[in-house]
Length: 270
Ligand SMILES: NC(=O)c1ccc[n+]([C@@H]2O[C@H](COP(=O)([O-])OP(=O)(O)OC[C@H]3O[C@@H](n4cnc5c(N)ncnc54)[C@H](O)[C@@H]3O)[C@@H](O)[C@H]2O)c1
Image (tube, rainbow, N blue to C red):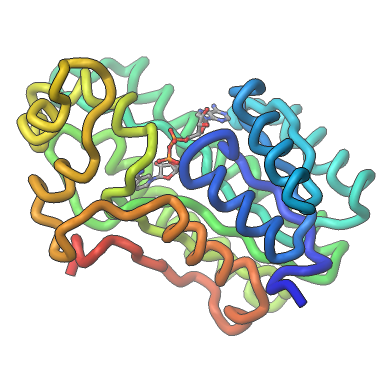
């Protein structure tokens, strides 16, 4: 038997990195998975791969800041699969830069993608999960939601918000059968680092990123970043290692956990 068989899950940002690995592992362990992302091309490839391996997944294009689309995604999940048990609020962005160079527009955009999305998904998933008799909401925070990082202050604010929002909703839902937990990855080898390196040049970790970007292109060596930032285990994590933690929180193995923060960071915050 799969660890999440007969469960129905939505994974946002499932076209890449941690979201992709999570969709694959939930499907491998028996869940029906709705993969969503703004990136339709990559998202459809992920779903095709899952279905080729004998899993059951569909792709839906979704911008997680759009409330009307959230309502549609949850309704179509219920129509197609009959229920909703698991929501992984994973989609996120991590632009960096010194606070004095961060515009109010940059700040609001980051808040919208990283925080409004988690609020909207959680708000609209709760009634659907209640109708299924309970569920598990897993919100991607970060080690940046626990400790500060110069050059990532706006990102710090978003991930700190996700951490405490999770705990508040966990308390509010504690007697409903709906569990709400946050996951805090450390330095994980995904495409997100390539998307942030250009704007990190002048800030903490920037020299590490520059050194790791041998050809000056947007493809930093995340292994070198983990070493540069002195992750105690001495290497970057893999997306699959975060997916393993998310799978645990999605499954009934974590039935007494709500409001917890699962740190998976090679010792970075210890
Ligand atoms: N990789 C790390 O080191 C790390 C560390 C801590 C936390 N995280 C968090 O983990 C989550 C996943 O990050 P990742 O490393 O897999 O990044 P990634 O860039 O590989 O994947 C993120 C996915 O989210 C999608 N996305 C971005 N904006 C979206 C939007 N508005 N609507 C829908 N989809 C959108 C992207 O298209 C992409 O497919 C993020 O919330 C990130 O902040 C990552």
